[in-house]
Structures are given as structure tokens and as C-alpha cells.
Image (cartoon, rainbow over all chains, first blue to last red; front, top):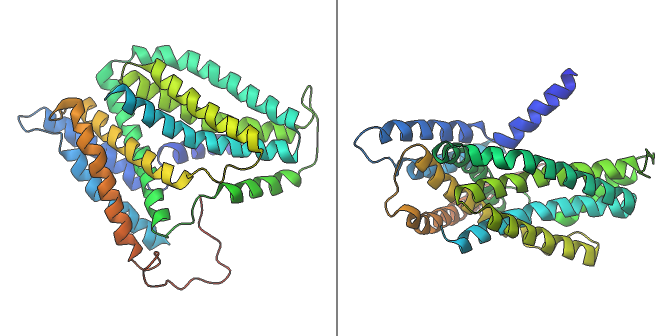
Length: 67
Length: 260
């Protein structure tokens, strides 16, 4: 039973989070900051593209470093 | 987003999933038993129909802003994962996704299993292999159709695009009864990664309360911008140690190929 539950959790972790947890964490943080910005007078649309430009190279660099 | 863009995005994404499912069904049918593989596929399609019947109305009932936030976040995470793998493959840091090799691995694994019948299924292993493959890849197709379709208020067109992709791939699979190695899967994954990332960025930001300049038309800038950025990263990573065209990284002779 425990092994099945562990297997199920591992499946969902792999399905949603994938190889690099930093990407998922970065996306959640980016959406939270976008939401906070959208409540102010500052426009918020630019934040996710900027985050993407940082997050993708960072994740690639981590992948190469791990080999 | 126009109907054409919705159709192309869903069609390409579903085609990739269909190629992977077809490879598994073909391996199960060829090495084990076609009837069991077919029954496994039919059982998985029946489960997927139940999932669609349950999830479809539930997703339609969710407020659009909340849906775009959740779907945008998931698409952005999925898109970045796909794009990351596609860039690593294109730059030589990861082995290319090879359906012929995956097919051979599935065939070898299936051939080594003892034959055991259960109920109407002559070969339980062939049934399970086919069932799991179609169900897992099918769940991704269902997710793509429901999220893209609901966000663009056109689930029907998204479903047609998915059905077309599955019909094309299944037809090819039945015709050749061999792995679909000639389908340019790595290039398709690169394109799908760009599309998922672009739509995820767009819907995620909208769901979080941001307003894009030019509204839907901003996707026409976002998609080529992400594509250009990804290609730049490929070029940069090819020059990095271990990449194609970069300085060689010493690898032990027995090191397994990086795949997945």
C-alpha cells in the first residue's frame, strides 16, 4: 500500500514538476508577483517573459552541471 | 488566438503524444498478441472517455480567470520542461528521442515476460503494456484538449484537432506496423515546447490579473520571441563543453546514453 502511494506520488511529481523543481517554483513565484503587481498601478504583463528569460538558461545550466 | 492557431497547437501537441502511445501499442502487438494489445488500447480509451465526461463539465464550470491562472501555470511548467529537454537534445547535451530505439527496448522487455491469460485477454502483459501506454499519453491529450479548448471557448475544435492528430498517427502505425521513426519527433517537441510556453505565459499572466498590450495579438510577438530565444540558447549551448561543436567532455566508455 505504501509502495503504491509512493509510486502514485512519484508519478504526479514527475508529471507536474518534472526534472527541475526550480522551474515549477519559479513559475509559481512569478505568478504570485504578477498578481501582486496587477493590484497596483504598475503594468504586470512583462514579468513572466522576463522570468522566462532568466529561468530557462538557469535550468539548462543546472542540467549541464549535473551532467 | 485564431481558430487556426488553436488547431495547429493542439494538433502538434497531440501528435507527439500519439506517436509515443502508438510505439508502445505496436511493441505490445508485435511481440505479444495483437488481440491483447487492442483490448488494452480499447480499455484505456474507455477510461479516458469517462475522464472526459467527468472533467469536461467540471472544467467548464470553473471561472475563466481561475482556470487561466491554473492552466497557465501548468502549461508554463510543462512548456519549459519540454523546451529545456528540446534545447538539451538540439545542442547535443542529451540523446535524441529515438522511437526506433524505444520500440526495440519495449520489444526486448515484452519478449522476456511469461505469457499468462486472464478472462477475455489472451496475454495479460500485452494488455497491461498497451493499456498503460495509451492511458498515460491519452491523459496528456485530454489535458491539452480541455485546457486549450476551454480557454479559447472552442473545445469542439480542439477535440477535432486532437482526433485528426490521433487518426493520422494511428493510420500511419497500422500501415507500417513499425515504429514511427520518420516522424520528426524532436523537432515537433521543440515547436510544441515553444507553443506551450507561449500560451502558458499568456494565460498565466492574464489569470494573475495582468493585461497584455494588444490582447490576443501579443501571442503573435510572444511565440516568435520565445522561438528566437530558444534557438539562441541552442547555439550558445552547442559551444559549451559537451555540446555539438563545443570542446569534448571526457565520458567513460561504459557511460549509458542520456535519454528520456
